[in-house]
Length: 385
Length: 247
Image: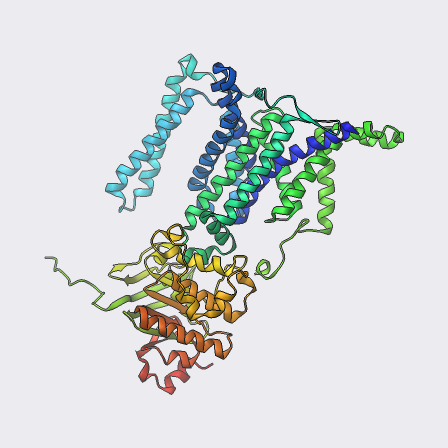
C-alpha cells in the first residue's frame, strides 16, 4: 500500500510538470490560435539552462552550489521566454491566421532546436551572432537609402545571403581552433544533480516517506499556477490578454497593442515550458530529444481537460500523470499479488513507460468519443459566436 | 518650379477629410472614390441600405481595413497603415455594429479597457469617469456582471460608454439603434447629444433610424460603395430618404 501511495505521489509530480507546461501551451493557443509544436523543445531548453547554471555553480561548491536551483528556475524562465518572444516576432507573426503553416513551421523550429543543442559550439554561436548582426546592420543601412526602390526586397535577400556566407566563413575559420569547436552538450544525455536539500526525504506522513524532489515539484507548480491566476485576473497585461483572447479585433480598436500582447503571451507560455523543463531535470534523464517525450502528453492534457479551461487542465494533467506512473511502474502487480495469471500478463505487458502511454492515450481517445470537447467544455453564448 | 501648395486638405475646423478612397475585400471592390468630411464638433450621418459599404467605411477609418488609394486626413496628417490601436490612441473611438462587448469580462473590466486609448493606457488610468454612469445609470448597477450577460440595449450603452472613456475626438457609431427598444434609443440619442455639447467631439453616425438621422448636421448617402448625395440634413427631403433609406 505504501508503494502504491508513493507511486501516486510520483504520478502527481509528473502531472504537475505536465500541468505547468500544458498551461503555457494553452494560453498561447487560447490567445493566438497557434499550436506550438516546439513547446516540448522549450522544455528541453529549460532543462539545458538548468545544466548550464549547475555547471557554473559547481566549482563554487558548498552553500552556493546548494542555491543554484532557484537561480536555475529564474534563468530558465527568462531564457526560454526570450527565445519565445524572438520566435514570435520573427516567425509566428508572419503566419498569423494560418494554423497549418504555423504547425509546420513550429515543427521545423523544434527540429532546429534539437539539432542546435546537439551540435552547438562556441564557434557556431560566434558565427551566428556575427552573421545576424552584420545582416541587420547592413539591411538597416541600405534601407535608409534604397527602401523606396522596387528592387529593395531582392537587395535585402542578397544581403542576408551574404551575411549567411560570412557566418559560415567565420564558423569554418574558428572551427580549426580546438576548444572553440568542441560541442557544448553533444548528442548524449546530460547529468543534472539535485542539490542536497532536495534529495532524500522531507519527513513522513502516516508512515509514508515524502521525497523532497516530488514535494518540491508539486509545491512549485501550485505556486506557478497561483501566480499565473493572479497575473491573468489582476494585472493590467492579464486583462489585456483576456480581452484579446476573446475579441482580438475589438481589443485592437479599443487601443490595446495586440502585437505586444502576442509577444508577451508567447514569452510567458514558453517561459512556463522552460520552468517545467527545470522540473524534468529532477524526474528523469535529460537529452536533446526530451521535448518529444512530453509534448504529446501536454496536448493530451489540453484535449482531455477541455481547451481554455484551467480546472480541466489541472485534473487532466494529474490524472494523466498518476495513470502513467501507476500503470508504467507495474505497482499494480505488487499491490494486488493475487491477480489471475491472464490479467497479470496484460498488466505486465503495459508495465513500461512507453506502453503505459499507449494505454493511457487509448483511454483518452475512447473518452473523447463520448465527450469530444473534453471533460470541461466551455459553455454559453460566447463560445458559439 | 515646384509651387508651394497651401496646407492641404485640412482647412481649419475640419477634423476628418476623406477623398477618393477605394477599398477592396480581396478582389471585390467595395468602396469607390468616397469623399466625405467631418467638421469639428458636428455630427455627420452616413445613410444607405444594407450592404452598400457603410460598415466597411467605418472599418477603414478605424484601421481594420486599409484603403488602396485615396487619402484620409485626420487632424492635419494622413492615416496610412497604422493599426487600429494607434488610431484609437489618436482619438478615434469606435462603436461597432455588433457592439463587440468582451463577453467573459465584467462590465467594469470592459469599461476599463475603454481607457486603453488614453495616454499611458490602463496602467496610468484606473479611475472610471463617473460621467458615463450619469449618462447610463444602468451600467453602475451592473458593474460586476459579465458583459455577455447584458441585454442588447445594455450592451449598446456599455459599448458607447466604453468608447467615451477613451476621450475620443471622433466617435464612429455603427447603427447604435439597431434592434434596440425605443426608450433606450432615446437614452442613447440624449447621451450622444450631451457628450457633443459638453466636450465638442465630432460624431460619424451610420444609421437607419430616421429620428436619429435628423439630428445630425450633414448627411451623406451611400449607394454601391460610393457617395451619391450629400448636404445639410435640413435639406434631407422625404424623396431622398425614400430613395436611399427605405427598403
